[in-house]
Image (cartoon, rainbow, N blue to C red):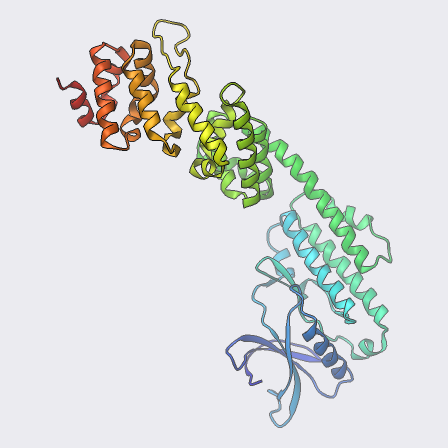
Length: 449
């Protein structure tokens, strides 16, 4: 392999690491094992093993090469060619802001999976600490696997002794990691207290997995409960800015469960339009599918005679994607039920109960863009406008401003204008009052004799 060495990335008593470019233009890291050391044959032997032991959380060894020594060009040296990892060390990451528990968990499990993989292949790391863990694209990668602080120790210690040393080092790395999580407090101590002094590497991973997973579950439940309290507060304000401010107080992992709690619990109110939309955008496809299945089931069961209002409101706030995710049967039944209920619509101006029937039908003024059979809706509205004051005022109260949008064809437009003219001639007061919300062209056509 032809290698073009670049800058020195790191040096030590037993090896130097250079940035390099290989013969096909890849950026690689080249570790040169210093000659005349007892450990070089052991290190190269391990590298050859690692080249066959690929793992996503271990820096990948591409090959072992003999190259010209950049320090003394008169001689050849053995070099290990590895992938060049772009990112930052765990040491650097831990100096920054505190971590979300889910991120710390992912990093910690990555470190332990890599270490266990090494041990299964008969290789010990030998120098595991936070500066030898790279974080690239959110994943941990072990580096400097063959860094040698004492060649005689590497060659004389038994493999079991080196594994125990790796395990102790990993325990300290996981401790540092948990000390930097945002919440819950005391997790690092709780984790340490759960470990035996002579815990194995697999036992260490198992304990870390259990502690962090349990903390995430408990934390998520508490966070969702707190989030519901904020969202259902009477002082909750509609709008993106307030919704985002509320969500900033919660762990980002809370979004799916908070949305499920709002929708499945039937808690969605008028002020929740923005937060439902924002939460839905943060959810993975399987959560969206679960919501669609739930709404399909509950709306099929509850419409038109059950407790459907909050669930229908949730569907509206999920937008076109939410409607299309419903089962075909649910969409057809729901559209038919809504259009059919418009025919029950009555508005009595002189009654304490203004709306008499047609409550479900009023949802057509928001959901009509999703309807496949626009003819049926137009036909129902035309029929209402041609009946009496009660039905005419119902259309005026709930549909007047969207009539031009509902009219998707020229035939729809003519039919609705003719029906509005009949209502005006019948002295339907709300229709006459609301004519001005129509486009001027429609107003002129309605008033024309």
